[in-house]
Image 1 (cartoon, rainbow, N blue to C red):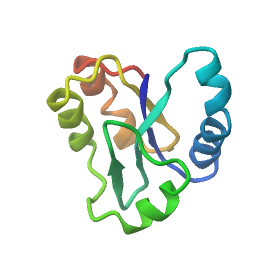
Image 2: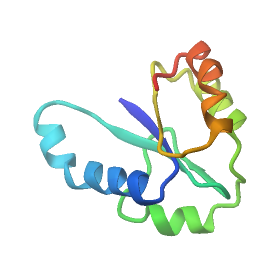
Image 3: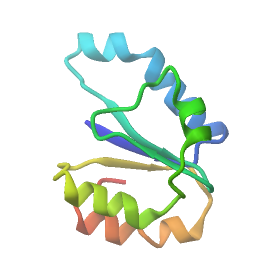
Image 4: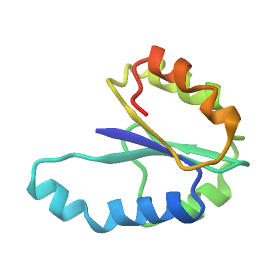
Length: 109
């Protein structure tokens, strides 16, 4: 399962850290959960094969790509990602307004 976390403050950051800590347990249950993208209001970091969860904060801080919801939609289409999970940890109406676009492309919120 490929997931993208938008909003990596308190809740989103804690979610990513929990996923990182639970990787061994998830693998023991044959669950392949990969965080393939993280975003804050300034930057977007993606890797369709999964981010390195040991260094995601540093990599996001150095990311050159500006945050753009359209980029996530294009990424899903370009790499034919089947049913990626988009986790919205923001309070942004602009992000919420994009839910229908993501669902049209096969994402699960």
